[in-house]
Length: 159
Figure: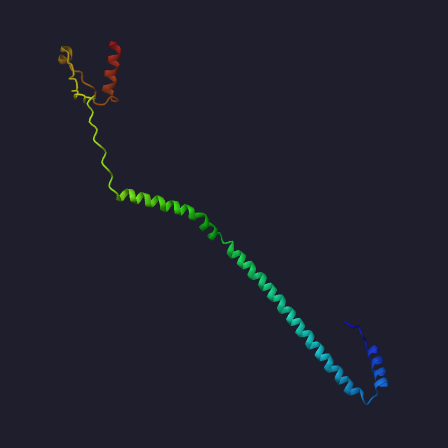
């Protein structure tokens, strides 16, 4: 700090003894020591106050950052965005509930005089020719069996 060595201190001590004198030198050094102590304590208090001010400023910045983060909460913005949708859903739900609770008016009966209902149609009966009645054809039980293949090949030969 002051970069004072032993030789400089010795010169200062000799000058003080010559100027102040040996009788008044000890009380003057005591006063100098007390004054130095007071200066150090004042510097320490100043430093402490300055550090407190910095901490408060840092804490204020931290508080501000936290408050900003809380204000930017995505849940709150989603709630704000969803509120119109919820209102619309509640309106639809109330309309639906009112439609369900009120009895539906029966539709007026429509009598048509121009349209006649069609009479029921009976299924036609199968026509059996005399040739069919004489010789009924018998289908093989299993078309993939050997007997079925022989019958199929015999039919192909006749045609």
